[in-house]
Figure 1: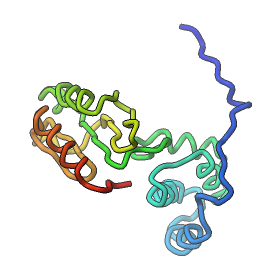
Figure 2: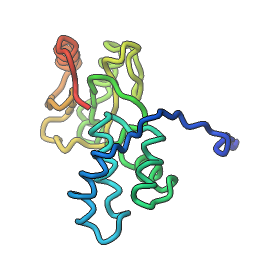
Figure 3: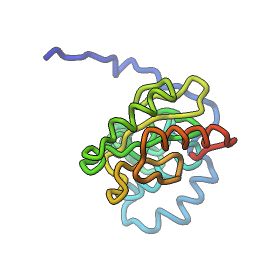
Figure 4: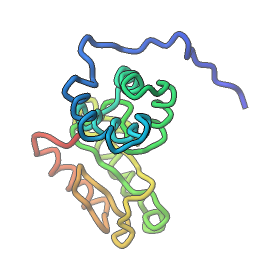
Length: 181
């Protein structure tokens, strides 16, 4: 197996003048979250959730700001954020289509659901449509095994999904204005 070399030391982090971890967010976290933990680093997950809730994803600059706020090395913040599927490390579409790929859904042919989504949206799993409307993901388990194959379109559950029902759900989401962070 060949080693893939990347220029980690020379990586340029996109920056903007205003912080992602705003003064209001810091104040809220200091008041409501930090007191729950003996050490500031214990608040890492709820802090990441708060920043993502505010912005819809976690840019590199935000990860650095969280590290500075909690006195945690930015590499540890990245390791934590990249470990959990619920954290978004790149912008996502206005609508998120999530197909469960757990064993129950696999047995019930989740692959046909994913294939229908890919065809309908013209993207691969992990991608966002060019218009920024939809992101397609597969998740390890939605906890909806009784309704396998199961999907989420934004925050709406779709149980016993079929290629037809999921493409209809995508059409319905497309006709709405927004989506969910």
